[in-house]
Amino acid sequence: MKQKTILLELLRWLCAGLAVVFLVVSFRQEPVSSAAFEDVASAVTASIDLSALQEGSVQMVKRLYGLNPSDFDGCLLYYPQTNMEAEELLLLKLRDTSQQEAVRAAVEARLETQKTSFDGYGLEQYDLLTNHSILDIRGNYVLFVVHKDAAAVQQAFRGAL
Image (cartoon, rainbow, N blue to C red; front, side):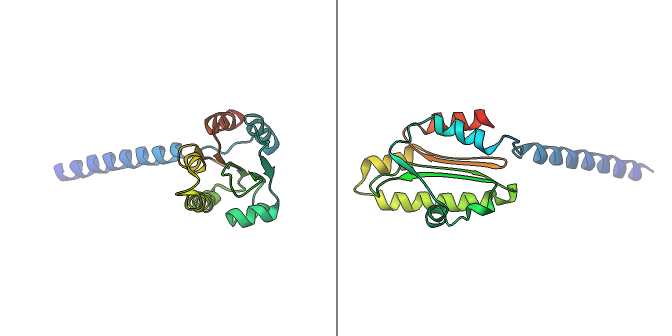
């Protein structure tokens, strides 16, 4: 009888522990935003000077990131007008949060390519890439920005969600 009581007590603690783990994992994930892509894009682009950048086409997104914009619910790219600059802005609205890791890998690969390109001779651009670049993934939205005002862009991004 005593053994059965101990076994039931252990089982109760195990169930309570599993419930806590489930709750922690559930609440840790970023919520999906219902914000319209156009509204988020407007807030982000209004937060910085884009005069030195040009808007990217579908082909440019594919070329720079290896991502197909038609796979997402929204895509906005601004990139440098010359190869001698590193400033860049990418905003994506994911169709599904399962796309997060593929996008993260694509952005990190782009950042490493840029760092390699500017390492050793483009010191100011390399500094932008290492100290003023932000990759922020919030549920179904992704922001990647390389800009001296990257923190302001991130703040506008989070505020718009």
